[in-house]
Picture 1: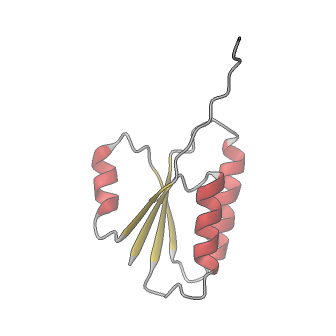
Picture 2 (picture 1 turned 135 degrees about the vertical axis):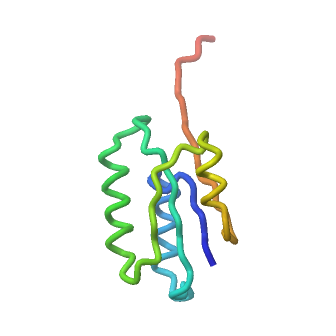
Length: 100
């Protein structure tokens, strides 16, 4: 089974993938594919550090990362091939000042 997680380098995506990799029920033939565009909305170094941690946790190679902007529909469609479960965790919070 292939599990596709968007927003893989973000806070929620990272922790979800980490939990999946640590799950005793994860079988050798299951692959987790993380997708993220590594934008600069917040520190890309933090995102890359998270991905490094996930790669190190994947002792049997069941995690793969693809740097991809979901606006590129052709590549996204390729990623969807043979995917059983899609977890979309993309969230950008934009805070501003509100005048009353």
